[in-house]
Structure formats: C-alpha cells, structure tokens
Image (cartoon, rainbow, N blue to C red; front, side):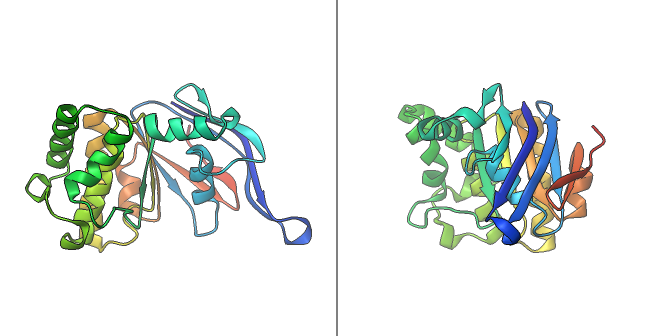
Length: 224
C-alpha cells in the first residue's frame, strides 16, 4: 500500500539547513494501522506531508497504492488527494458554515457523485462515527470530539486507500482522545483502509498494528 525509499527533505541551506528527513525507508501493508512516533521536530509531519503529496522530497521516492507520488505534477497530486489519500488534522479543518452532513459530503461533490449516492454515503459514515443524530448541526454546535469525528467521516467519504492523521487527538482531552483513537482503530477494520497516524499517545501505540519511531529525521526502530 505504501512504500517509502530513501526519502530526504532539507529546509534552508548552509550552516542553517534543517535536515528534516534523512534517508527514510519503510513499507506498509494494506489494511493496517501504523503509529508514527517521535518528539516534536523529529520529522513526523514533514514525512506525512511528503507521503500525502503536500510537500516534495529532495531525494528518494514514495509510492501509494502503486502510484509514484514523487513523479506526479500538481494535477496528479490533486487527483491523488481526491481519490486515494485523505487527511485528518488535529485542528479539524471543517467548514464553519456547513452542517456536519454537508462537510462530509464535500469530497463526494468534488468527485462528482450523484446526490442519492452522496446522501447514502454521508448517512453511513455519520452513523459509523456515532453522529447520525447530529447531521444538521454546524461545527460550532459540536464538541471538539464530535468535530474530529466529522473530520474522520469526511476523510473517509471518497473511500481513500490511505488515511493520514497528524496528531488527531492533539486538541482533545484524554477521554475524548481515547474514543477518537478507538474509532480510528475501528475504521481501519470496518472500511479496510490503511492508516498512518502520528502521535505521542501511548494508547494509540497500543491500538496500532505497528509502531515506527522517528528521531532527528531518521527511522530509529521499526520491527518490520
């Protein structure tokens, strides 16, 4: 599902250069949840951005579901993020003026899905994340945990092959964060999606199928 080979990413030049990623390599099998663990500044977010096509590596290659991300132009990267890769951010990223259902439907509208299919998929996903009764509420009327659940439902709307979550519980209290982490675990099993989740939370590490640790831009320990 995911193959990262020799990826490097440096910001700046000369003595002030920051080597965010240094020859990072690993592969992830389909249908698994991987926790990407490391201190702030270790390179986790940069790596996720390179994998999802939000940033470009200076060297190395990334392949998602057989697609060479490194070789795509901007249109190709847009298609990748529309059809194969979805993001969940710690800041939720919902559109304030839209209801929960309308937020979830955004990727389906972009994909040109018929109205009946959009409504069916949105209802299914809101039920999956436990928010079937909150479809008409806007983000400002929902708790932080509920907003993150809407964000997860939206990320799944177009049936992505890879779900990238960057500190998805970073804005939540411990109890709410635990419920969101358990939801992500359930989503991997019910939707058959592959998930790459950056986290500091030991509970998420326990829920993951595999833990990849990154320090100073390098993969530090990887059992696979």
